Amino acid sequence: MSKYKIVHYINQFYAGIGGEDMANYEPEKREGFVGPGQAFQGNLKSEAEITATIICGDSYYNENMEEAKNKILSMVKEENPDLFIAGPAFNAGRYGMACGDIASYVEKELGIKSITGMYIENPGVDSYKKNIYIIETKNSAAGMRKAVKSMSAFGLKLLNNEEILSPSEEGYIKRGLRKNIFVEKRGSERAVDMLIKKLKKEEFTTEFPMPEFDRVPPSPAIKDMSKAKIAIVTSGGIVPINNPDHIEASSASKYGKYDISRFKNLTCEDHETAHGGYDPSYANEDADRVIPIDVLRDMEKSNRIGKLHNYFYTTTGNGTAVANAKAFAAEIAQELISDGVDAVILTST
Amino acid sequence: MVKEIEKTGMPVAHLCTIVPISKTVGANRIIPTIAIPYPLGNPSLTEKEEKDLRRGIVENAIKALETEITEQTVFQ
Image 1 (cartoon, chains in turn red, yellow):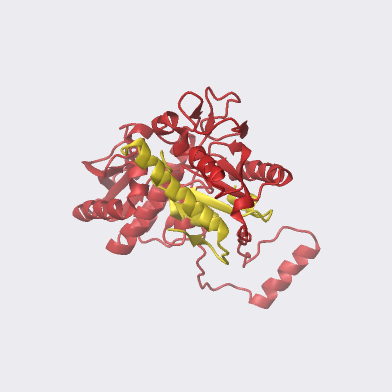
Image 2 (cartoon, one colour):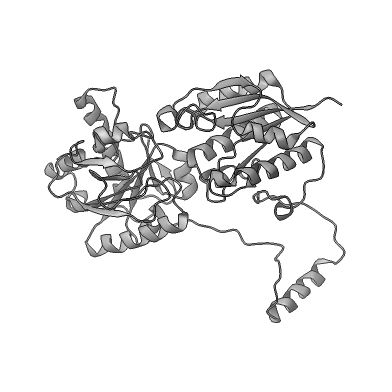
């Protein structure tokens, strides 16, 4: 039997090309495996072979989605593989978006089975879990070995057309799909069983979990902007020079609150970024590129806005746990309200 | 973070480059920006051109905060 052919997609970092300074790297195809592909090949053994690896910078992909995915699609087409594997991306947001997007596109356009792997909080999960199988991984590359093992095993199952069981049995993230199955007991009996377990305070598994609607209705608009107090919040990690509170470059455990009342404009003399998830050179040169103090000061002067709040709030958004971000923002929101702020401009990188 | 702040009833304008992420996390007023490392700038422009570009985006954000909406809206 001939081996199955696999094409693997990774970013510039895992290809060993570079970090954030190389995040604009354009799509490139190389023969055979690269980086984590070696571990995949080890797990796939003699059943399948990674014939090519496609590498693309995370910023390039996300900033040029249409162009990037079409370039990559034609590279995949040339190889005509049986399976397309992207990542794993762990908790890297842009990498996850790229993996989810390209895997969905390859499967949709070329009909080639595609999988990826991510941590449950990666924004790529909610965006793409409906389209493709996303194997659940740890939140960092420390979980690489396990991720590769489960992705390889799952990929081989798909290749061999084996039956795919439920998300918890297979280790992929719930896709929100319903499947008809035959079971021994009819619905009414199962429901009564469940109710009895519930009454006895025993563990039971619902057959129909309610979807989580994690949405907040839009707040009312500002009626008179010329009297409104506007505050800036950012996940772009802008801090006073030398990062006095040592906000972490990733997976932040805290946020900062800094006085900008004496600044008309931010410069490389006074502010920089602590963020480790993007090339910092542009923000270090001029932090107004991330938090537009200069323009807001002008707008304050011309009375387009009432006032720019004296403080801005900042943290680094990369790899930061959703629970942390929520807690930071809840505290920040309370302070903003007690300081009489009317509206917020929140910038992300 | 956008949602936690918006919950209190304050409108939030989310300025970001990757609009699909902003939609997924549930921002309501979304303002697309230039690039990940310089959302509100462009180092290849002159200082004046760059500030004009930034002013345009911030003006768009201010307008978004003045606009009543009933669902997620991207302000191009």
